[in-house]
Image 1 (cartoon, helix red, strand yellow):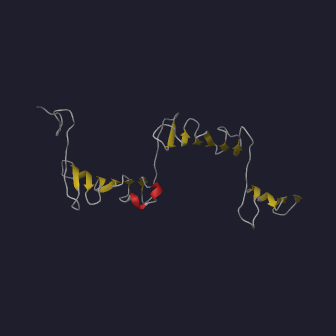
Image 2: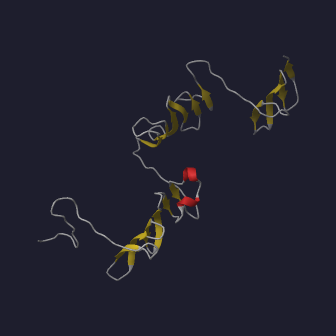
Image 3: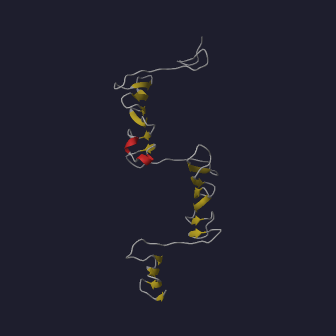
Length: 220
């Protein structure tokens, strides 16, 4: 039989071939080492029988690990040491760390959130490269968008103002506080001119305060 590869594993009844590397629980790890012609180690695929984890090494350093619970750590050997609600995939770097999703210049890059085994996603964070906009979806559809100018649209995908709220029914903006000693307010400020105007609730009354001093009041 002639083989096109250095090593070929075949099974006569088409059930697939098997390559087995056996170790003992509690012993040193079983590994496959990739070396160059000078004997230098280029990479290592290793199974640690002591903690039932797979690790992947390049240039003599571990780069990724899959632990016994299936958690994946990139740049960390202990993904399970992080918050249990967010440790399925951990990316670590001693400096800045990040994950990049690259899409076509006229396509979208998305993160989907689902709770069933189908395409009925419950939420999406989507970057629309064609519009240079960041969109947030809920089951009702797109709920909020930040456009290329930094304008925020809630209920609209084309905001006309810095914050644009739109609804097919009644539209409202709520400003609340849970403190019994403070009252909620809306502040309109011009930082360049160092002046501001405050619209503040005072009990059951509404006060108007240019530069912080009350100028008018509507009683209850």
